[in-house]
Amino acid sequence: NDGSVTASPEDAYDSEYLCPVSIDGQTLALDFDTGSADLWVFSTSLPSSEQKGHTLFDPSKSTNWKALSGYKWNITYGDGSGASGTVGTDVVTVGGTSVSGQAVEIATKVSSAFVSDTANDGLLGLAFSSINTVTPKAQHTFFDTAKSSLSSPVFTADLKHRQLPGTYDFGTIDSSKYTGTITYIDVDTANGFWEFTGSGYAVGSGSFVSSSIDAIADTGTTLIYVPDAVVTAYYKQVSGASYDSSQGGYTFPCSATLPNLTLGIGSYHAVVPGQYINYSPASGSKCFGGVQSDSGIGFSIYGDVFLKSQFVIFDGSSTPRLGFAAK
Ligand SMILES: O=C([C@@H]1CCCNC1)N1CCCCC1
Image (cartoon, rainbow, N blue to C red; front, side, top):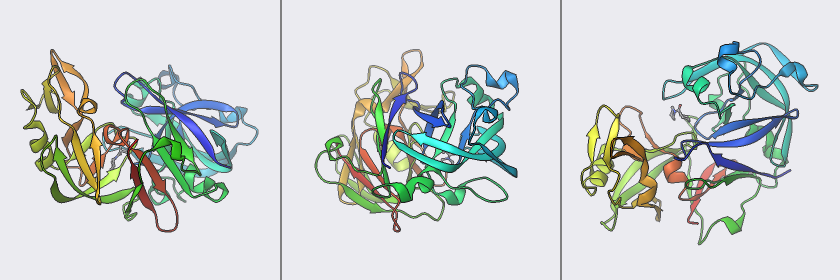
């Protein structure tokens, strides 16, 4: 049973996108994250000080809840945030797609970043189930659980820039949501991510530089993190741009005109509009860039600043692949 759900920007800067998810009739706003594989929720089991402002899942009110005795989870994200707790299964509905027996991870502890992010009631992981953190047995993602009931084993992301709701679709590729053709690229699932090799980049009207870029498509990461060569080439074209260690990244005068960034996906040139790369005000009249260095991560991350410029197909067939199209 295919489904479609709205993805609403959490704030004016599209720092994350939240989607309504119903667990046995209790609806929470979850951050769909193709960079992780745990479905976890704020719950009544959290200390009351950590519950404030969030919608909580209360398993005691669910008729379909089945606790998994002795099962636990503990996740740490790349930005240092994290959460942990216990596990059960329940009926989970996203748009028109409903699955039973879905592992739902109940938070009994969450880090301060999640406590203060009061619009966010948890995450719905859409990476590969191989990196699910539940012990003693890893659990399936919502997509893996739903896959066999979908018309096609795919989901798509159509995220929007600034203030507009987008959609995640499960089971179908809606041809009204993109223009031109879809370019597919192979995915390497060894690390559990939607990982692929980009073919290069161009800055503004400059020539395309062919280079292999090991990257993941991560809807749960806000910005684009790419190799220093790309970052340097990009901000060289932005007058007044500089690396500001106090802000932890490149900033530039908010009045600057930002060039487009083209990222190669095979022979397809995906264009990120320059305006998308003025992420948010930083300090004074400086703004923080949506393109930053991937140094220390181990690979590049094509996050929301990139993904919202494209229509993206996450193809979970026996040979997983990613598809990209303009829109
Ligand atoms: O934890 C994360 C991100 C954090 C933001 C949400 N998506 C997952 N990582 C990025 C991918 C490599 C591993 C670390």
